[in-house]
Image (tube, rainbow, N blue to C red; front, top):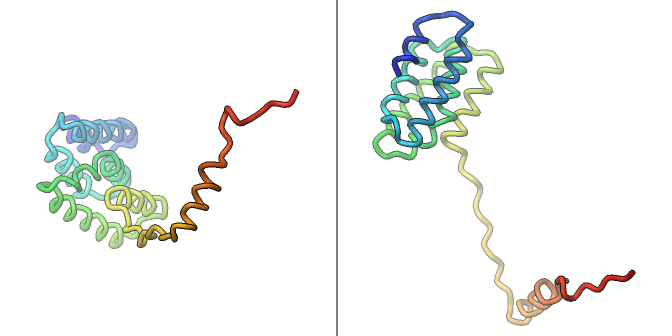
Length: 151
């Protein structure tokens, strides 16, 4: 965490890769419960405080690595939801480029996937149809013992 905040102080382009690596590492540590969730939330908040350039990439990387885990934890759900709302508001207010917008959308859908459509119910078959389906689909399937090789 100290390394992440120390790297965030310097605005050089040369440390973007190391910052991304550190963010992913913090996310993995959080996911495997080696670091408390507040560490990841603080790092995400730090990126949102200056939401430009590389901080967009780093925030998205952090969300992709441990966002789903934090979203499913009951005690971090509300905090992460607030941070994600702030992230969306900032992205709309700052009019980011298409690449950054795509990164943000991907991170958001990784954390909270859209609700899937209604599931199909299993079709009920009459006993005769069920037996015919069983004969055609299960009983008549070729097995290794029923296949004869022609030489």
